[in-house]
Length: 293
Image 1 (tube, rainbow, N blue to C red):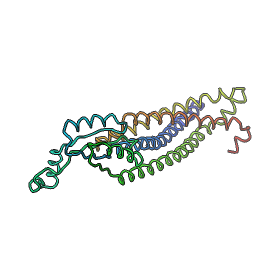
Image 2: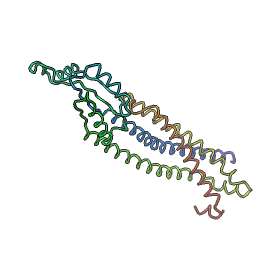
Image 3: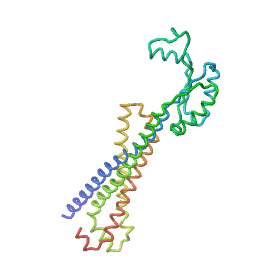
Image 4: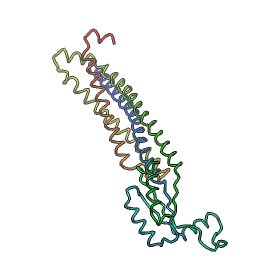
């Protein structure tokens, strides 16, 4: 009879641990998704900004060698991320391909100027930086004119700022909800052992000694849940990569590493903290109070 009761108790504890592990895994998946999207949004912002270009049109008197020297000079400027030189002949070929006709046939000369396509570093792709960059470039005697899509840049920056604020608010809200959910699940698992906790307290066990096995179990559950959550998230990222290989421009190894580390940290810290609070709650209770909850 006693052995049957022990088996039932072990089975019940095992079921509680499995339930806690599954619940924590689901919550960590949500947390991991938020961390992943926040980091990816930051990289997407930088990627989009670095693909916005400033087109510098060169004077006809500028030779190819002068243009290349100008490119080398610009590469040393703090705002330059990448520069493409497009010669007059290349510009003509591209326009003929797009328009389907060659303007030189009736004009008698090539009307397209040689240009430099400057892709800016993300930190400089904003209105204030563009003003002084444009002012600096226009001072150069080799430049005839320049163009950039200021409205598009402003719209991109505005939209990315909104997305960042929304994701940050979602992360804070989800962290609070996650803590509440995991806390309730941990409290329920420890609730079944409230009389064991009280008995250990009666025989003189210290609070630290009583808390130790519950904290150890909580940390173990947190680690297992984090590993499972990272496996699910990793599978999702791999599926995204198979569907769109270009996603690696945004989803870097740094993003994946930080996300995995954050999920592991959340799993350990939240479960351990919730177990600490729950055990302390029952340790403070008197015997008669344990029957009323």
